[in-house]
Image (cartoon, rainbow, N blue to C red):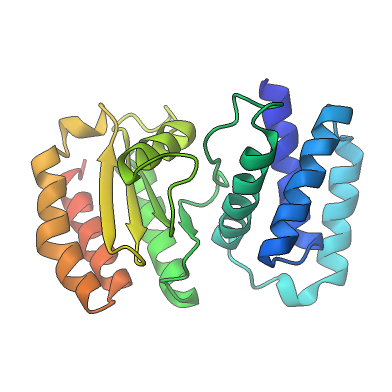
Length: 230
């Protein structure tokens, strides 16, 4: 099972570089990946590095992409894989993020500079405070029924035990004006449900009403940084 998940991750990684990204393309690519998985359980390591080198030699315009841009592509494609592979991959029911990025801004609520700045904040807290913070924007919760289950599904799938102060995730749905902060049991010891609700009521909601998404998240993250400072 672990081997198959690893292979799916690399398929998605290289699909990011060599595919277009319309809704129809995601559907087509998701079906193709499902068919490939059923026929072939491995991807040669040599091909990975050859294609990676080819990408950097021939695609100069893509060098300014942020790592979090991969997460946007990846979540959209994983959604199609889950839709099309549920009978072949019953264990694949959540979304994996790029390990080097804590952000998946699918709804593009942050601009380039804001994303870079926010990523820097999250990494500082992650390594200084040993707390993993994820930020995801979305317009639906597939394959989950609600934002609560969706948040815990992603948090549990991506949390690393390397961060002994736990994990926390922000889920933002600008379309439905819905916000969720979820923590695992470890993080809950320092970031109570009451504390997280106050972040939503006093910081996130007032900022989001004016579409100041970055400002709201930045202020909330700084509050978390102060609360968990070692």
